[in-house]
Image 1 (tube, rainbow, N blue to C red):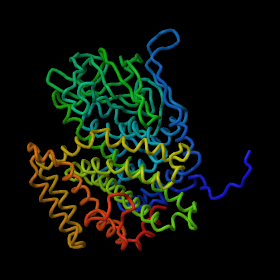
Image 2 (cartoon, rainbow, N blue to C red; image 1 turned 45 degrees about the vertical axis):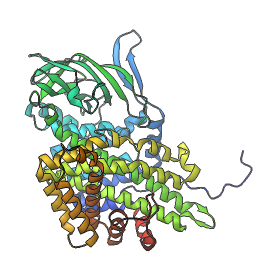
Image 3 (tube, helix red, strand yellow; image 1 turned 135 degrees about the vertical axis):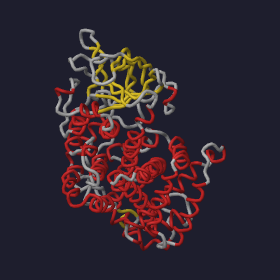
Image 4 (tube, rainbow, N blue to C red; image 1 turned 120 degrees about the horizontal axis):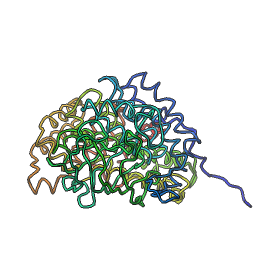
Length: 546
């Protein structure tokens, strides 16, 4: 029973159009995917902001998946039960073409940009189910290089039908892919894997068949139809395509030991798996496992960038929504000068992340392999690193309300560190940048060409770009000094790329503010430390945030 009037409370964060309200994302779609891209994504943007979608996101996160190792009669089943909201979210994601569809479309069609923007939009509803969506997308990049396995798996992985249940792929209208790369003793050092793969000709699968014995320490989405796994074949580390159901309907040995109790990402089941004589088809040559999955790793890392951009954007939108409807000390929060500084600074971070992520997707559409190779590693390092502190600052904009579960920011805060860890942590990606620059000089050449698109438009940026490119050219990945300073060098490259893209594609005041606050220097290190001469830009930045 309420005995007082309730005033000055913020209305629920529902009813927005996540595409139309996100100026940076909308402009990227129109620029690189055209009217067809907008028309394809508009319904998803409207659905994402509805109370229905937001409630399904909440329920999927609240009611975690449950592992069932055995049935009532003691038979091994190794299944995971998900809340119905998980399946609703997956149905919408698959139905919107967010899985492997772009790999079946012509080059320069804008398919990767459409899919990337859709992934950003729908990840804002709930991030956990984005994991199998992302793995299915990425699997297509590897499978397309094998005629036999590609013909078998790529069409169902690119299907817009979400078909639940472990059955032979020939009986399904669509399929989902998972991955099993890391093991207890190695983690990201997959060359330390001990799972064995024994050639076994004539197996119940197409192609060159093997039987795998060992374990996988972090296997997410274990109810997927097929998995790409690394194991040690006689010729060395090799990639395999491992289905959960064999063609005769029997289950491939795939023993789920337990589900991880994670900080966030609660809707998504992440499991430990034991393999014992598990059938797999070889993908690529023996001993070339890392090379076989390199495109796939690039695709999942791109989704880490996009997922972090989505998390940052959602945190910003919730902070702006709160500030527009909440008053304190005689004025709406959004009109208070210091709050405007914070919101404008957060808006710069979110826009730079969005523009970078979509530009990298455009590189895939256009076959800009060298730019994508280096740009994705830069984005994976920097954008994912920026997510956690940015979400923390956005949460603080809501005060104590931000720390309460029902307002959405707490879930985003638990989610924020994840993309910086999965698919290679910060150190792994920083060192990957050093290797790419050293071993494939064309990657730095492609990046330099992109940076020089805005040559002469900002004296400060020109000087900065010259400095970071010269530094990158001098990096030696075998040097202790270079390795020790890798993070700073990679951060500077990433900031240069973001600044250049902002100059190319964002309004002049926004680009100038980014250069002034990220390139030329700033007075403080916290969000909300923009120089006072940028106060006039705050309205532009906040308005672009919705």
